[in-house]
Image (spheres, rainbow, N blue to C red):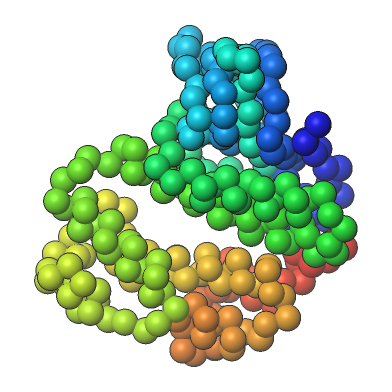
Length: 275
């Protein structure tokens, strides 16, 4: 059975995200969870078919689809073909509730996957890392779970986003930031990528995210810095700052402490201790 249910230590449970269960190429049969599961789940169908019952609705589950199930949501599922093969993961952690809430991932969702390989590969990495003896695997798993949450958020946004010209412009801006956050660029340069004025870009970000463009970029860079600190704890603060597009290490440290209430080094020590 390709399933793993880790026993997490108290120190591992202090991580932003930690694994509670994982499985790949798992042959589903039938499961009834009248009280739901204790932590959020992502179930991705690889082959075959199943039926999923939640919130008084029935869903036909097909390949290249994903199920996001928040913690404690009652549900029932079973295979509806000769086989139903899935990859799945469940997770928890200090940052889980806050992040899922801020991203709007608080309700059950069933989505079709345009690029299923992205999440499938993440699920396989999580499973294989969780079952090996790598010393710092819990830090790496934490970053992979963060990546998975971000991908689920992107998938849900794509599903719910009307295909208007303005939404395409906004998606282009987000993609530019994702690909260039490690470089220094101005609001005017960001606006040039979509041939619009800086004022237009500010209005668009306020409408879509209720924040200014560089407020979003700052949060994005800090999120990337935390992933770097967890995956490469030996990197200097100067190197981390440089790799996320912040020239001044002192400014990066001050910004990090303002947002996280601890310094970058204290963040690393907190999540390294006893793991």
